[in-house]
Length: 98
Image 1 (cartoon, helix red, strand yellow):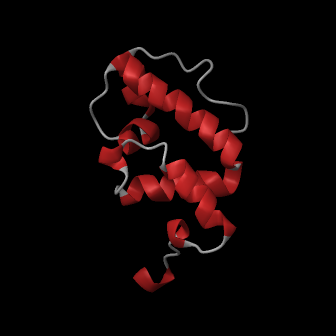
Image 2: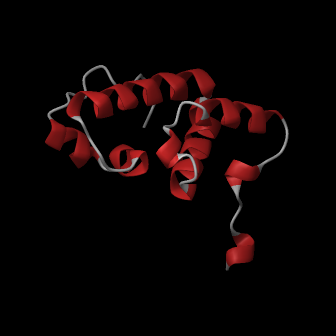
């Protein structure tokens, strides 16, 4: 089964440069999180760099506002973390981001 998994975060070519630029935005403690890398690579493929950059900036701002100490991946995948912090979702998600 593992031979059928495509490692999207390791693709070569121009996508790799875009992915590295996005990963520079990630806090140092989360840079080696494979789940986060795969999530961001997937979103980059679907939404493009500008939309993902805007989305990630908003989410990092929310993490700072509420003092969230968990992983960035958990915050992004679990909307409950943002709701528990009292962060409003009104302007943090740009149009087109699922």
